[in-house]
Image 1 (cartoon, rainbow, N blue to C red):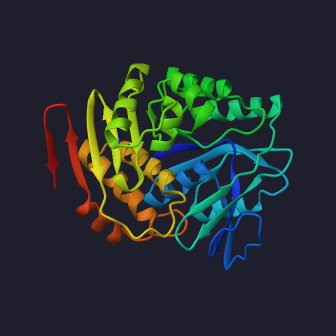
Image 2 (spheres, one colour):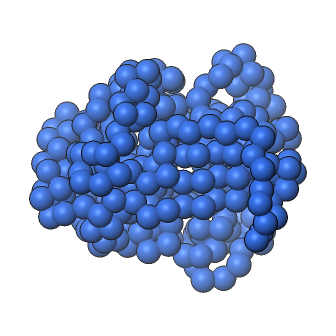
Length: 322
């Protein structure tokens, strides 16, 4: 694979994340927030931030409400990405994340804007224009009103027909429809995979078996993230897994997005398979030790990488590389 520095991240339903720290969430009562932060986010936006810090030339697109785009514009300027968002009527949603002292996070996600047929036509024009000189596309997050799972899947399918590598990270109906469009890479976590299969997956072996059943769909890369239990990757009929060291968890918000960014960057840089999964897993592990996404310390990342175990998995033997 040829190295490239250019990538497009697609965030169809971005959000302003309002994060508040509380002692303990009490339902039906007044909860006092000790500290808070409001910032531009959305899964694809988070991926873009990490990719840009890793050194990628990132273009961001999707739908953005005209009423409150300022924090997004500030972030895009700050992280040095090219803004090709389609602005639409209404306000971009605010999602509330309540972080308890015991590290439990409660998400309260509001609905996003509703896009029109004209908005969709403008987005498609933008997307396919970007396809003329970009190979990698990351679709991440939920869908706004007006964009059906089938419509999103049609964009993935069209990009695939044009020879593009689409990394797709979503859930529920969007994931189900998107999988049928044969994206180049999917990254469900254990909960999303459980929801897709329709049964609770409790072990790595169960997740592995469920992911294996998706391999017939024609998806080149199936990556399953299992939190502290690491990452498994199925590619060309071979499994490889990575287990990061035990981390002090500050916040898990954005860890999955960071993993997607690491996987994308590793492929863009044509890293060898073991190096790629080690790098992406370590980057995601670093993310849980901080608030917000981004590469805060190259030295700390290198240290986590050195402690991340990579295993080649098959039915007969397990081989560990240090």
